[in-house]
Length: 137
Image (cartoon, rainbow, N blue to C red):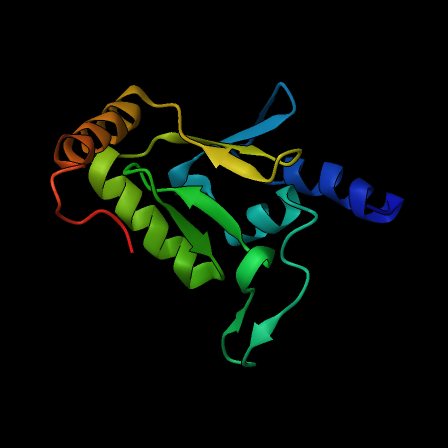
C-alpha cells in the first residue's frame, strides 16, 4: 500500500463519529456503521467501481464481507447492501458493536447474543449432517 493511501486510512477511519480504536481494530455500533467508514477502514478494498452511474458497486473480492450470525457472510457491494445488512443485524440482535480489522480485511461481532445465535444455528445444521439430506453441492 502506498504511503498516501495508508495516511488516508489512518485519518479517514478516525474522522467518523462513534468509532473507537482498540488493538489495531476499529469498533463501531451497527447503527453508526457507514459505507464511507468501510471504505476508509479497508484501504485495500473498494478500489474498482463497477455498476452504473446511478448505482456504483464494488464486486467480488473488492468488497468486504460482514458476518450475519449464522456462519455466513454478506458481501457489502454498496451503501444499499450495507443498509440491508444493518437492518438484518438490528432485527436479530439489536444495535451491537462490530469490530473492523484493516490488517486482515475482516469484521467480527463479539456480542454474546450474536455468538450464541451463531452457535445454535451451527448445532442445528450439524445434527442433521450425515443423514443424507442437504449436504452441499
